[in-house]
Length: 60
Image 1: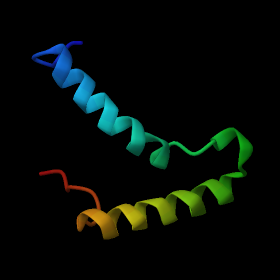
Image 2: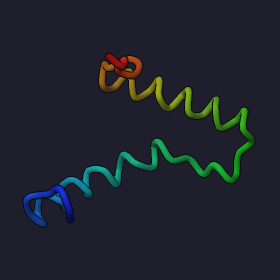
Image 3: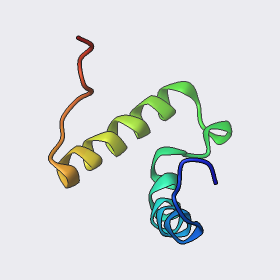
Image 4: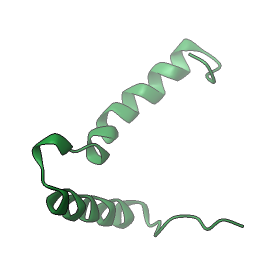
């Protein structure tokens, strides 16, 4: 995989990421737009509580 120094490094990343990625990819095709926005607001609030990081970085 491009960008990884070893196959093992790629596998470690992907195994950790596979548990996190569904958190930010709800089944959008089953939701209305307002429901999707509300769900993502909730999910990002949970992420902020867990990581302690708020908002997005600002452009310089």
